[in-house]
Length: 235
Image (cartoon, rainbow, N blue to C red; front, side, top):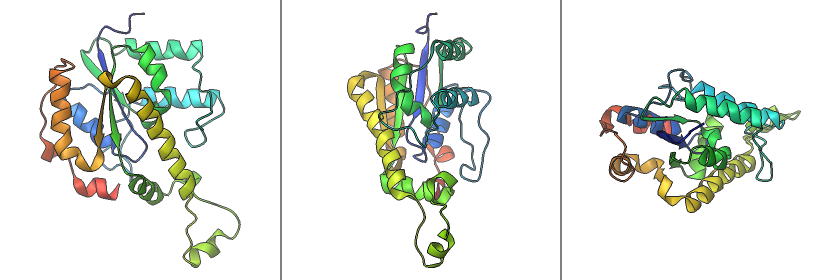
């Protein structure tokens, strides 16, 4: 199939880094990010902006190797089978009628080389958030797999000890961001990186770059209608 007939925009970054906020901005600028999106939750009250088909594709590839995003390590070989590649091509074909489309899913960080090869015309917009902020967000989210659940953990909590797996969370942050750095160094002309705390000043420049350098029909956005510093600080 011809996978270079339009310009996909891949929106990603480590979990809890502001990827949903970035995706909402891309959507407002005119990037079609999907019709069937992951609904809002307590941790993302304005929505996740994740195309469920791409999310499921990534989770299925993890499952093919007996993994989830929590236990993939830098040495894990996440080879995409021929059958899964056909699924990916079908996802692309279903959206190829749109001049500018894309998807957001943090799990994409583990598949940058796959998508970069399958979609040679794709552009990548990454978001970076400081490790302490990401770990604090993961801790607030109370994801069970990021906490110790050994017998007697309640005693530690009573004593004020944290059962949050901080080192493990930091390793995940490093793994995701290392993948981004490696890909960006190899394909700098295809990538833009924004910093979560600098979104108000950096987003207009990114959109201008998309329009002028990548020659994409995207629009300026009303930042005040999209950015909510209180949500990002509490996310």
